[in-house]
Length: 129
Image (cartoon, rainbow, N blue to C red):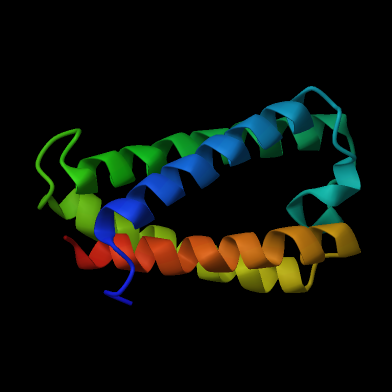
């Protein structure tokens, strides 16, 4: 895993998180079908809104953890950055499993590889520079 350069993993994660935030904003705006997010289990627009807001909030928080781990915000060796990135890794591994069991096949095919790559990159970040 250390063969992946630390900075490459960090910037890749930030790029993926930025793309995910943009995606969630399109979900929030109603441009993405409700059944294509959250495993296809959302029932209405209100649940879609709550899901998108929760997703955006988590993505901003994990972006802060990456920036902290890089030393851009706070100290790179802080517990928030290190343990936060291990938590992000676990979150993306669980999300990968969830995507495998999504009702909507598009979600499975598109997001399973993205969340798996994100988990690997998060693990690399957690290991440090």
